[in-house]
Length: 186
Length: 87
Image (cartoon, rainbow over all chains, first blue to last red; front, top):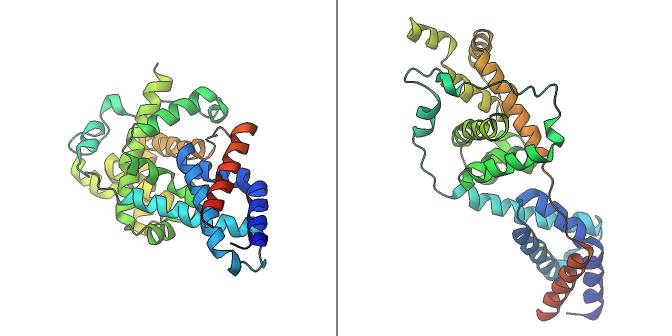
């Protein structure tokens, strides 16, 4: 590698590692994986540095590479096979599809209390997300992670729309129930 | 009777499915009407929808710990070293 490119890259590492890492961590919620992705991003950047013309800022360019790698992580996660039986539904609904009495959503008083900024509530949310199969929690988070609408998410990740919302449906039922039990009924 | 009601106004199982579908995709006219009618009669599903949206907001707000200054410097050095290796 020519010395000038090495210097250029070293400068980029110095300037953008922090931002890239925050972004990756925000998107994959796993610090080791986030580090790997950032490192891979710079490795890919080193190979492609000659094609970087400076039309965009270096940060935009690096983020584009990083985002590509993040999508790849999601793609692998949603491809994991997970059983899609109706056991989940039997937990919450009776045979004709009405809520079981004890599983009906309780009152969270979410209007009066500011749970979103509550560290304890965030902790419960995190714990409940982790309790789901990884593919399910990824699907629940996809909407904000990918910042795209359903159709685009499906195209990008190569899953059918029906598959996506059916997973989200099962995941959300469990997630909601887990939060209610861990936070409101403790 | 209950069966007929469910065909017209959906079961809670189906209503919650449409609630989740709605957050990602556009519902058909028929689905929108059915869901609306169902929620008028069902407090549990109305509550479910509010809480489901609330959970989405909470997920969006999730904070992660950033690296400390020394961890960050160490990480930068690690990347630079790695870049050097591939010369």
